[in-house]
Length: 289
Image 1 (cartoon, rainbow, N blue to C red):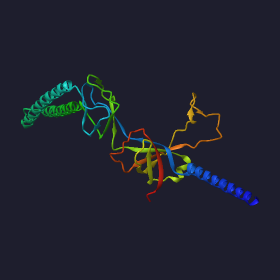
Image 2: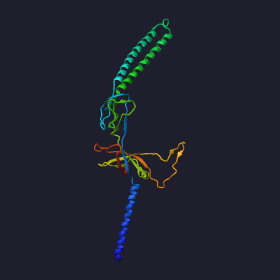
Image 3: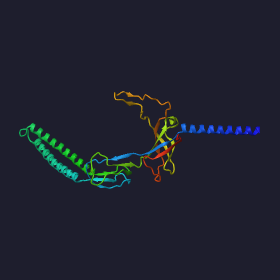
């Protein structure tokens, strides 16, 4: 009986020790292992705004459509800009004729004897010729601007990507500089992992990373591209008198701040469906060297 009791005590002690060691392992793994479940898929979002104003005559894309760089997204009425181009072309022709006339007049006066044409008249003719030349160059520049404005009535995709949140329709009035839609650059996807500050000592640039999307599917490979050097201090606000507004209360249990770490995706393939804003788990494996 006594041996059986001792055996039960030993088994209980061993199980308790195993539970303690396992609990410590889980605690250390959670506190110090370089991984986080707070990861976000991100991408460069380009706000597409027309360079000229006018009525939208055609929308050439659909919401969530993939477009190539240079594809027309939507078009603006060209009539006003065609007329402006014709007007500048006429101005160029007029200024060219004026320049030729003033140039020939200056050349004639320079060829006449000083007894017929004074030096003052020669200088005046040369000055008028220079002014006519400058006006001609200004007219050419205005024509090129009008040509550019006409070309910009077709709003094109600046990158390969996906049209998103499309809310522009034929008949809308588009204002220059006001975004009409967004294009997500398909070649710019990356992951931003938010690591607790206690785990920063275990992170280094170029460390290999394994990315598990919450949507499932095969894991992605990547590496740490950069570590953020600053986050907002929520307690460092400014009061009405432009003085520091310090929170009078202090929590004894302080939560570790989360630091953004930018992760480059190395093996992005077509079968991976990435959406900016998706959540993922980021596990840092080891350094590339």
